Image 1 (cartoon, rainbow, N blue to C red):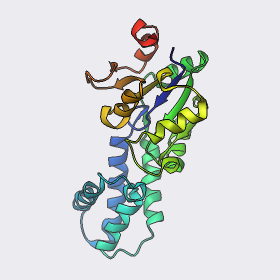
Image 2: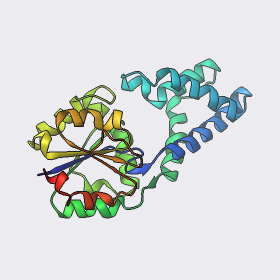
Image 3: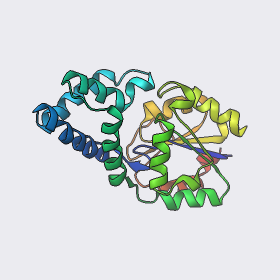
Image 4: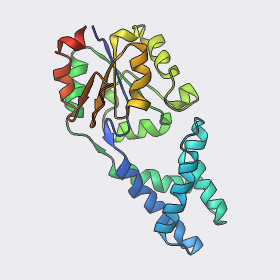
Length: 225
């Protein structure tokens, strides 16, 4: 019997890719004033920097502040990275959009006394701001982030922290995410039920296109086994 749901956050509970791109372009537009390069060229240059860092498991190297710092140094732009990051964050939060059915589903799961936990490789402070602006914080028991684990996903430490806190075996948990490799592969190995959102993968126990389908899944006999 499933007693806990472990949710990824970005692009699972809310759309963040387009919001992030829009906010990054705002940053590049601001920086273009100080280096004479247009925002599109700066954006492509910054993306190349990020691409070189994306396989790193070190959270500090994956933070936008780090890649922004490298861009500032490259063009000798005398601006504090915290100031630049705030431009990103304010625009990002403004454009963040929750996926249809998320609130209704979380509310119903909470009503049925499931433990609800966010397991995200995001930084805690950043994740909390996203969850607060979307009015989702009240639904979750707690978050596990890269600040708690010290590395990026995938890593089984994320799930061991959850198990140690809620004292529920992995077999009584379900993981929900938008990437099988990052969000579900380790949970699958650990014995959790795995729900992939907004795409299909035969390795997942369930693949859904609408968040509300989770409520139908919990009634399925295969889910209860």
